[in-house]
Length: 348
Image (cartoon, rainbow, N blue to C red; front, side, top):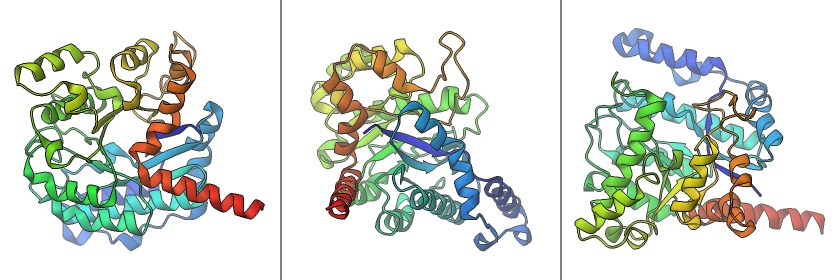
């Protein structure tokens, strides 16, 4: 099985965006604020949005399963207050759940949280609980910068975040550390803000002893870890100067990286620098880079090709394609085993 651990609902029916635009207008004029019940998207519309897009590409590229969360740039936690974010998160999470119900063999939901600048992260717990208990979500996306590029929140190592971590440990779910839209003109959303955040999150963990407080906490840093693999020697050296343990011991029991790196040399570097046990397959399609690479004739985000063309042996590829995702997302592993057992019973 090939599991893509990083998928977003970027092709949701336009009615979702239209409703969100009405909600944003309603922030300034409450008389214009729409009710959640006013958003109506049929199952047929959901099927159409998936079958011709993500599912079609998954089949073409030989991918079996995608961990599916709301569109990252649409989270936009900096817009409005917590109530605005809470309503928006609930709507987006429900749509991803519905997709997983329509295509149970291909999509498993991952939740966004209703974060908001200045809000206590504990306010996100009810949505987290609902998604895990009712929707079968196997993980969450955690935005370390709800301000949208101004970084007004404490670092991830701060006790500010501990209520979320306690719930993650309780439910045995990991968090993908994923920012949203940048409203700071200095930082392009996908070309700078995302990659800056990946690097920043890693460094915040490096300078702390967070995983002594939460030894089973697991973070998935997307986009290949930002600058981390490329500057691995710098991070090793900084850890040494700070009298921290070697990175393998200090961080790599808890931090993992995905393969959303869109050229062969990048994947080759990632797989040579980062231990194979810490790499999970992902493509983030249909996402930030949707075009065809003129140098190869293939889509930039067809990351399976890069893994197949790497120098990794078959056992290492299996870990990246499937084994590591099952280990980092135990609820996913349990769900797949239960599904396999049910199928075996039906066939018997």
